[in-house]
Length: 186
Length: 440
Image 1: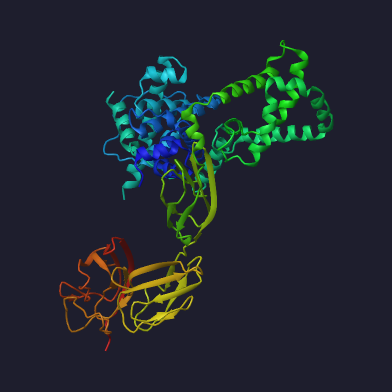
Image 2: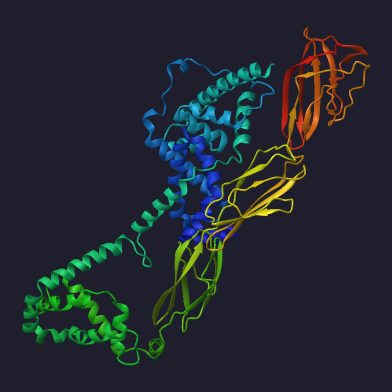
């Protein structure tokens, strides 16, 4: 069992076997990240593939400050952002039926355990731009300022898009909870 | 704001350690892409597009020279005298020598230096072409043309004052690669020990033929995929390098033993049991049925003399002698779970019995399931109006056909049973039953 250090060292030497070990060890975690940014599994795998190529090519740039997984995750996130820029055309598209929804404040339904698949489904139902900002802000923990710089948009745009994404998600979760309550009753 | 925090927390918690498995074809695709990228990237130590380009150019140049060969020799002879002044003529003398015996350094230090520094072909060919122009056109030359002549002169200077220290390097013997690997063949995953027997080497690189490399002197290496792998060892010191690619390691595929038992819950003893063989890459088999009997058939049929749980082992051998086995523990034993209810019974007219029964008693006076491996259990029986007439949470106690001591009506009843098995599975079953009184 190679340690992380040895593995990185061997990957710098472009050892094919080490590359495979690295892939086997981390691809699950990294695909888990890219899944949140993609509409579906093939898209998530596309992002992961691009990110893995970058990781293998630039592994010597990893500075050993911060965790290695954190570094790889950042590569995946950046790749997802690039991917989004490429597909920007449809980024802010919204179904007409959802346009009038306003941000309803209020708590989430109580005692409602959502499964990860349900949450993933909700994330995937978001328009690409919302999905990106929600992921970056809510899960990755980037600041609006950083997101604005990453995406080349205004800070206020980031904030307003985030709030709309949140409202969208809340509506979806409430709908899910209603369905769950109905089906749970015998 | 509370609501939004909830959302963030919810998502963050769910996706913190989220892992998703990539599809099976993902790595081969990525691997191909990486190989292509590697090919495009420049590097001294491996074949890539630059080398491929250089080889093409060299081939082109060589071809060009071959075609125009006759013409060039003419110009060469006419300008030979002036060439001598610049020095490359010396080089021409030494060139054949260095090509024939590049590893002998005892004599003529200049030749060895030149050969080490400029191993590329084509450079030699260029020299005579360049120098005539130089002599005819005098100092105001194009920089591109001048360049090779300058480098040659530099080398010439270096050659004359080789310091003593460097002389030692030149006396150094070139390395001789040699190695020994054990074993040279075996079943996957195969671990091999490599022993480096090279002489005069400073550093070494092992290439294992499956993409793996090692810089250790005596590495042990694990081939985890079957195949034939050429192993080569490259050793270096300052006098040069030597590559030996002699042995190939054969890694045989390991068979995969797998089988299925049919039926899964046979009525033992008596009912014959058939074994489906799903093994792969195997040539012969040995079955251990767990009752002391064995068989070497591909798909045997076996009769057990006793009921009970058996450990069934299948050993599969490949032609190369690789082995794999598959084991099913406690087959037909209590870890299986089954529960079956009858649909009619005839209670004992003699009075309530309390519901205790003997499973092997064929009299059918108590309504009870035939079951195996049941842990928790709850049976309820309702009459046609939906009123509960009997309840039991013990498998050993069934319904004797009496309600509070009085005989129940001859009628159809509905039962519902739920519970869990020892193996953790849960079950819910329901059905109806007909209660029949003896009319004598």
